[in-house]
Length: 206
Image (cartoon, rainbow, N blue to C red):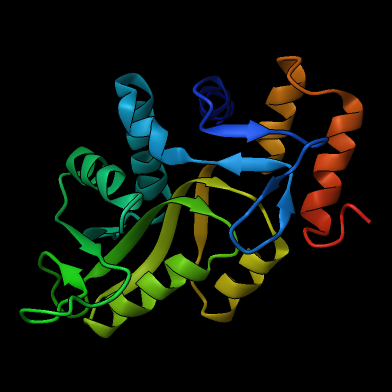
């Protein structure tokens, strides 16, 4: 959805800087910085996201019985999407609690219930796939993952394929770049650098 890409750029949830790259926590130099948590502060945008992802679920995962949010960024969106679909919601902690019953899943999911996980951002898929595993360990039948934005990195495609879990996002890196060009936020030369990064995130500056 180009409108979602446009919205992310407009509220600075996604920033592009091919000539002065950002440094990720991993140490990787990147021309893009993404903080989709900002979307929760914009009612119109968050409603658009919830309706958009709800429609994706209706089309691609119509058998879904439970909506799950990944902690923490996926939780508010999962709540709005579950409300849109009138489905139960759970959320998955990054690790089990170290007190009480030591739960990693909050909410109720019955064994075998078909579950769709919601995250705000798909990079390599590592964190959300840990949440998938945690939900599966609780008996959920995870049938897919939905997100707001994907970097479209080859690693994500490989990681999801390895566990046979499909994923889909409302918008993605390619679409965002095209919108940025149309909005005159980046040049054609910038676009080349941005595509170069996606093809080789570790060696694009060499």
